[in-house]
Length: 232
Ligand code: NDP
Image (tube, rainbow, N blue to C red; front, side, top):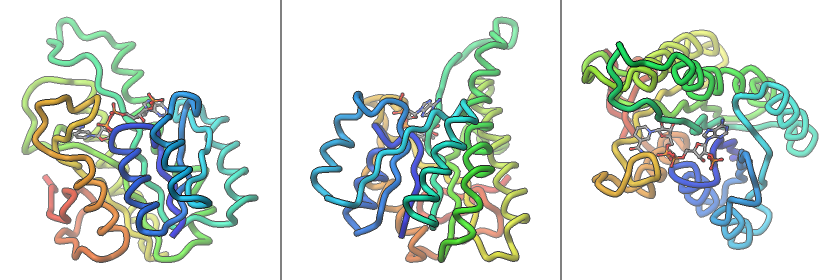
């Protein structure tokens, strides 16, 4: 499979690239700054011909359009889009203290980023096979788990879930799977050292989903990385 992953230089994105490369897939690795992505350079050497860095700043539509044009000429199609890049800022701020510039920034990366990527890469995906779009979401974006803080992050992920559900309906007739996946609380720069989960395990579980090895138990897009329903 040809798999596009945003934010592939570290954290969950890097583990997704590693898991995909390990399984023989071709990885289009979206990165902001290739010179800082040492882990990806190692993967590039470990899986010759399978890891292809692609310059992608998800807040910049021109950057996404350019990378889609480049990918179309080099690969002709893709099979999977994984919108993984994300930010978590303004933690535990009270509504009275909220900085709207930070809310806007979070929406720009966590919601408009995936929307820009889908807008420009959908033509390539339509030429692929056994296609899936995976938006990496969070339980913070579920009504059930709302814990009354992290306004920008929670709201951006709830909106990403809605975008995923709308997209699922839009591409239904084309038999493209659309998921908004909660990856679990995992050890990355964002998740921190105390997180109980491993990004390696989550990345492999997500690969199992896109490869069709996991039976997904939900009619809605919002699921966890083991294929269980997160809807509501
Ligand atoms: P990290 O903070 O470790 O990594 C974030 C990644 O996103 C980096 O690769 C970063 O690139 C990239 N990124 C950020 N902003 C942009 C941008 N504007 N354009 C392109 N790339 C960007 O986070 P995780 O790996 O933990 O998170 C991955 C996803 O999982 C996120 O969507 C997050 O919300 C979600 N998630 C994570 C959880 C956790 O416990 N870790 C829990 C629930 C959800 P760069 O290196 O250039 O900064």
